[in-house]
Length: 135
Image 1: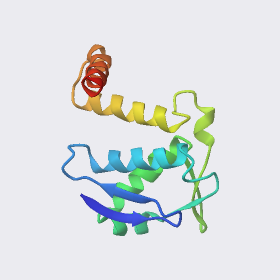
Image 2: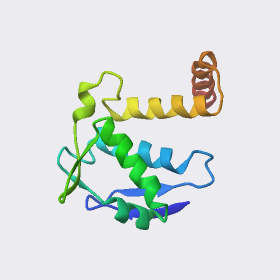
Image 3: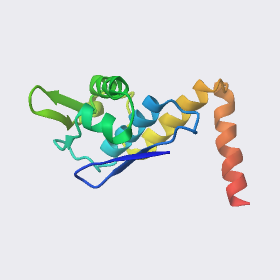
Image 4: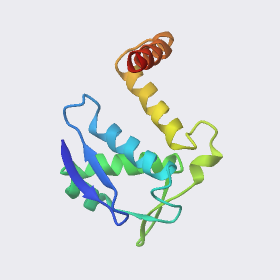
């Protein structure tokens, strides 16, 4: 587990190398969660790609890929010479999550698909886990 980046808003971002989830996807999901949950308000400055890479001990290109990906989806906006800032452009896209719970559900579904879990089995997995937790 890599513990590494604490932002100006005192938010800790960690990477778990043993989780089986690609590092870039962990970082992407965490940043999206931080933006959609309000930890980063619209206009808040994010760490630079270099700061994030060094802080987490991961490849610069990995962080750059994540930033490009979430910028394309409207979660951040880059301003040349000024930095990268949280943005709410994702709300205009009906396919993007609008809150932390939706973001978490989207990440779970994506991870199930990456593991090859058939679509029809995903709901059953959640129901079985809920039942196990209740009983």
